[in-house]
Image (cartoon, rainbow, N blue to C red):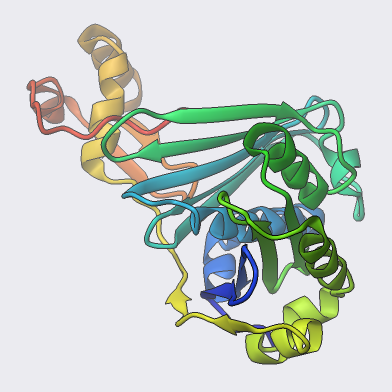
Length: 290
């Protein structure tokens, strides 16, 4: 099988082309385990997580990459986040019953995709594009072509148990001919889902590029991690007034803040409100509301 919960960068020594390959298993299970998603959502979230991990290899600073797809029908939101430390989490929001099998286009028809780069220090950047491809891979390739002007090929696969992905991309400073890219992208396009999910990375590279001079960098571990905390939950309560919170506590006994990613719950009673509303310049910003 592919190298589980690892990501490895690929370098083509004689070409201005870079790449990466990722395999997810335990991190994939942990992201999904508390949600009871149907199989069709498990599969598409697996692809989204693999894609977010691949795209995070381009981060040159501390921060996170957020890949979000918004649909107009039953599936409202698909989201995966990956930090520069390859820490992943993911979530889906949908209404009603979903078909047992559906293509990516069918699930999120008429929607849009956003890629957000959120550094710990500095300006946040977001690119938004309509979903014009039949698959998530095609939509991401279109994004890079239109927004970054970087020829990119992305292969993704997930079966509800394992997820994997491969990306090859022209380097921003490219001096080689288009023929090099056409050859590498054609070879990459021959990759089958079963190979991506079940072959180890060394075998995978040899099967695809045995006539090329390429090598794998040392693997980085990929983990599931949700960075929710009681402190961040308290910070999110400041969007409400103290009077509103006191009324909720009067009626329900406590204010509960639930993390949508890992289903952790943090309860705040009347005795906690003084601490909630104490100004603290060191407080983290509250998480995005999804």
